[in-house]
Image 1 (cartoon, rainbow, N blue to C red):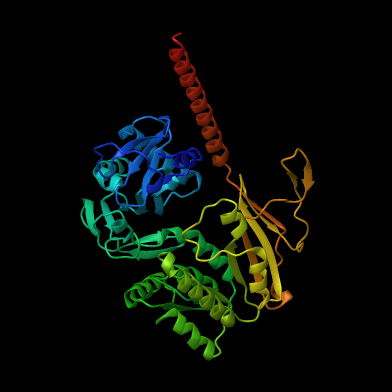
Image 2: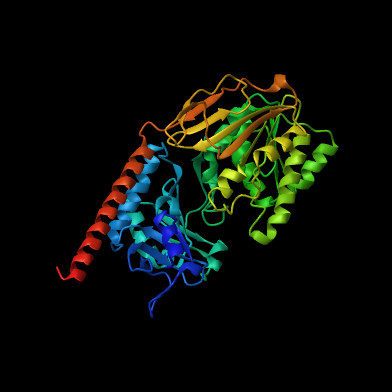
Length: 468
């Protein structure tokens, strides 16, 4: 690959684009695992090759070592160990999450005694039989369903479809997701069967909305947020545009005994306008819309939709209600890194974020968040006390306070100061196993070993050239 691609690889970026591929072998099968080198021939690792996608290479490992069955078995054990450390023991959980687990192109979700998988790259398709055998041997599911009905496969030149790769096709069955039970349909349900990535958000929404007389779930789906809110509020209004999803949501609510959830099949934008015109107000509002932007061309419309849905929700917020809004800091997240997150519809600078909120909410608390060895949330406006701390400035000096550039801003807003809860100036979240430190130390050891190996090879090459 080019020097630019090599620099990205050495920074451990998992993707290499077509423009950075310099030389290809004469014969190269789509989906092959290939050896990647820089312009000088120095090895950079092993990666999946895709001949159709603009992302031509997805790194599987950084060592110059072949990828075999033992490698994939170790990857699976590492992924399972991460879930155990995080307290994700099931019965519904994501077991493998693509590049996040060093496993490009593969998604594996567990629903009780069944697995739902997606193979999203040519290499994942080629290796699917071996990976299925590995999953069956390790986890003993009664069924493995391939939910390859996603449009992203077409970008890789792959066909779409739903298949059963192991066992019999499962009928819809009940499984606990978050703190409530839902019937999941692995063959026809949303995504791989349900929205497993929202479980902690369901719980958080239930805590924050507790005590509200009335709550609104504007993009309700099959009831993930609505059913979690139901035990903690007087009434939940669930709005969903799909009649089929709403029907499944009603069935889930009935099975859980959540009689205080009412369902409306309607476009959320239209329904919020109707509720506002009727003077309806809510103590808690959940907005969890589908992606407004599928590609760059649709970003302008997505921004308009994002603004409209939030403005309409603000109008429906009752006095005493609390709205939580989060945005990436455009300067820190994008400008300083040079990387763009395709899932961010809009990023704001701090002054833009505060101006947007100030127009409607005189009472606010602004916090900053950034993932370090702990996730830290601290107050920026001095309310709630001083966020004490000491920070080394990079020049050898020590300054008081938290002199970090935030990665995100988080604002808690209300129309009156009295409605803002007492919020701490500083919050920390970490893990008792200190897995971040363990992975950091392991990465340092790998880098040192790689540097020593390169130095040895260069010394040996110099010796041979000198005839020694």
